[in-house]
Length: 474
Image (cartoon, rainbow, N blue to C red; front, side, top):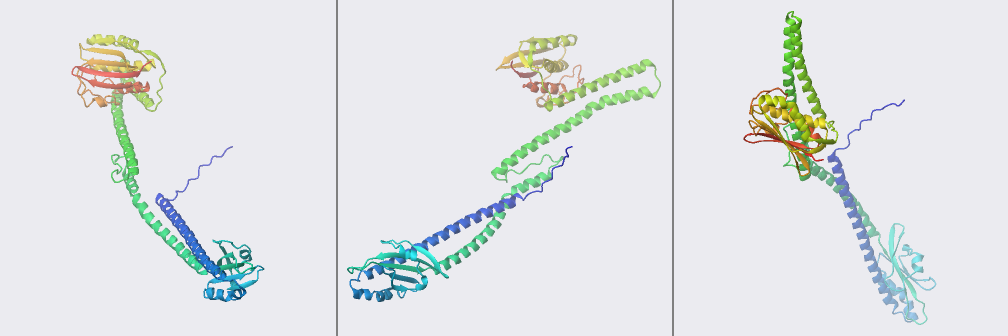
């Protein structure tokens, strides 16, 4: 047996402002850290280039001294000359040795110039640099082989190294200051980012405050658009359009509920009144039969109204799916003419049909739609008038027009003609049959036409009214 477990509710994450602030601070810190790293690298390269220039200058000076050694006396005096030239350099270590690694001159022996530097000296400038550490001090040095002009003398190896501990001390101090600067800058960026984000998200706060005020009684409220940036302005405009649709739908729903109550109140009141009168005193079977017959008429009216409302609800929810078969509109109109012929003759109304055409659709639903149009036309056509039905193709579609003589519909009533329970009878001829329907006929017709992929419209002229249905052709 499988046990169902409800999903664990997730706790809300960090706010958008917090996320943006952290992201802003992180990006700013990364940029500053990268800048600091590049600065340190450039500083080290600068010190290295500076040390190379100094060592090359000292090596060149040593080369000039060795160039004067052309006899044994000059060779014996060479250590003194080297000491006179470099002895005052407190941060310079010098080692001069012969072919068998015998030191001829050495200054600052604590530098302990690596044997690898002496074993692989350069033969021509520039000499490569080698950095090493000895105790607390760091050294950077170069070595070169320098020939002697004395006949038969072996060349000497001259190695020089600079004490670079002051460079390291400066770099370390600069690195610490840079880290502190990055941390302070990151904190400042976080505070500044928080202020910028909150200011940038202020339109969202205004939209939230406005949304909190929206309710069933305040659907006319709208989101501020002018104060918002472009991105949020588009969102606010979309929300305003949604609110407008909701307001319109809510107003239609309220009107619809009121109309339903109004339509059902009259037959229910009639049923209750007639039943209470019949039960007030004893009556014979004929009287009871008359009351029951009257009640049956009211119940039938209620049943039709409920069925029509259910039909419209199915159409609104997309459950009205007509079958697709060829339907000859001319034949359907003629069949309906036969049905309404007696009523039309009794009132002296002429029924005329012109044209024909076939559309794919549901014959029963289309017949109901056309029947509603004819019933509506008969209700408002005066005695001696005419109803003209025209079926004609147009641009691959089929157009069915139902025109009737009579008082034209008011211009302000035309847009609402297909609303549920709406009647435009106040400005039209109150001929016979007025008020027989519940005001759902044209709404049902529109639902059927739209279910078939078509559209319906109405227009009025000086002598009558025309309802036009456009359906996709076969």
